[in-house]
Image (cartoon, rainbow, N blue to C red; front, side, top):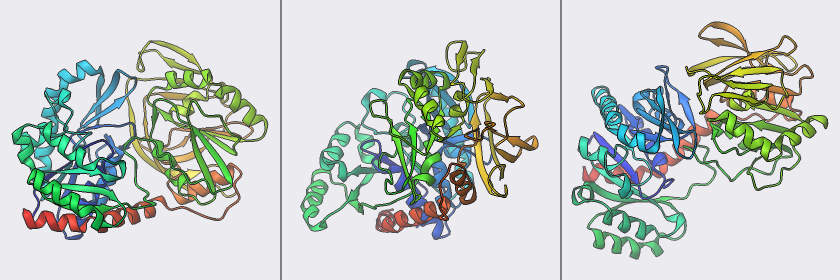
Amino acid sequence: MKIQTLMVQGTTSDAGKTTVVAALCRLLHRQGVKVVPMKPQNMALNSAVTADGGEIGRAQALQAQAAGLPPHTDMNPVLIKPSSDMGAQIVVHGKVRGDMDARDYDQYKTVAMSAVLESYARLQQQYDSIIVEGAGSPAEVNLRARDIANMGFAEVVDCPVILVADIDRGGVFAHFIGTLECLSESERNRIIGFVINRFRGDIRLLEPGLEWLEQKTGKPVLAVLPYLHGLMLDAEDAIQIKQNQTGKFKIIVPAIPRISNHTDFDALRAHPDVDLQFIGPDHPIPPADLIILPGSKNTRDDLEFLKQRGWQTVLEKHLRYGGKLIGICGGYQMLGQIVSDPYGVEGKVGDSMGLGLLDITTELTKEKRLQEVSGYCLFGKDQTAKVAGYEIHMGVTYASSETLPAFMINAEEGVQEEGTRSPDDQILGTYLHGLFDHPQACQALLAWAGMQSDTTVDLNALREHSINRVADACQPLLDALQRIA
């Protein structure tokens, strides 16, 4: 049996839609099926560069890996990257279309839906099966008009839907019943069954509830998926709060309001010798061996956020006591003397004084730079450690002749130096996201920061292992789907 198009929707955000889609893609890929993931609309600040030179959510890049495919912009035709509480950058088919507030984007959805359907039509021509991920919940009745993310898409393409709920949150039966009550009759009929995610305990104690749910709704529970500990999968957007805190090497990352691509730190979270912590605005800032300023969707506003909360003083003290400091993308820009925004890329035209810790200046530009790069580190004992990553930024940074480069990379313009180190080699700034993902680069960067360890972490291998674990757990779901199709 061939599943042509199936949509996975959730009763809430973070119900497990991304994981279920990845698992089904891996299972079908194992069977030799040409399967592709798709998420019509994604709102996330964790993004990836695609094979066709665009930008999609990192969750869809993970699902592409599960399907054995390079990521492509048709897998996530509309990406919304919030830059403030009311505004966001709109990315369509991998390219920036502009900044819009919520009301303007609501009117733009008819254009966005056309782009979504173009992508869907192309995927239909190339693949046997399309596993589609919804966004948030289909029960958000205030967003029903012009919906392109959930039932609006499912109704147009006429595909079946499975509904996922997270039992670990509690109230799973109310989530299912409440969601159905908020849907139209045609939308309810489109749901072919339920999936209960993150169950732990004795299944026999759950069975009376399953029987009640099926009698109440007339729809089957297709699978009860177990709670899987220790998964290493790319987060769609929310910061992974639970960290490995057993290591002796202390790393802290400020949780700035518009933090982007915090998946940069997944390899560090997985390292047994590292204790990595995200520090929010209301938490004391502990001493650390290494501080990393993360990427930002709004560098100037997040820079002001750091200053208001005393991080500038903390960083200066950290450096005086011999600590190391890394800035990634927006965090790199913040380390400099000035961040200039002559075109109003991040809002109001003007300049912001940087933290003044690196002798660099940055000018924000209208064009976004998107590319995957590889190369080697220009620090350490032998300077042969390989690095691989990707650039997603709007801005050009200029360094003085007194600074040192961080990497040598193969870019679109050819082989070139990338990033900046301070003359005393205490500070490193780079535009490379994913710079810790390569085991050699991760080890070299931690050694540069002062950690003494021979342990290496292969993030891709951990990710593959996790994909296979969730796929194995979802085999009963695929079996049930193939029986009823």
